[in-house]
Length: 80
Image 1 (cartoon, helix red, strand yellow):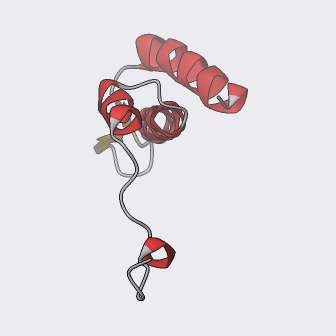
Image 2 (cartoon, one colour):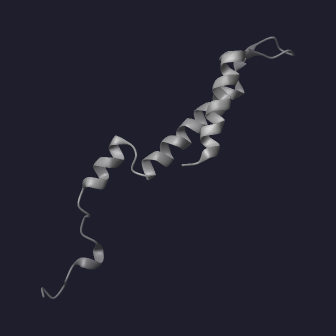
């Protein structure tokens, strides 16, 4: 797994706890989504993708248990 994704998730969580889910832009005085929340979401998707590729999710475990399907090169056109 990528340690960068793990550290981004940890840092993003702490920043969101401190600042909240939204921030107020000083110029417009409007609330916007906290950029740390976006970084947290992206890191979470990356982490899920890495764990799936490594066979660490339930869905990936099911795929590992399936026997491999026939390959295009396995077909014997002469029947031998």
